[in-house]
Length: 110
Image (cartoon, rainbow, N blue to C red):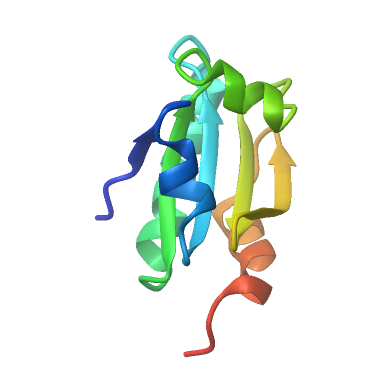
């Protein structure tokens, strides 16, 4: 099981934007049951994907500048980054297969 990296405004740049891997970022909140369930889904996706995908979790209450910069208005929100740029986002719930399908074009060929 891949442990997600906990992201704050302080480490977002180093862990997400300056990372050469695809980064799957789950924006969530402790008070949101739906976002906690989505983190479980993202964990399953991360466990099934190759090592070139990094899973991070962004507590919106701990990273207000990051939330503002990426216009996260609702939790759960999932944003995938590649080469420091967001490549897709999903607002609300999604299945593991939906997330994997959106990630496929950005993964290294096996």
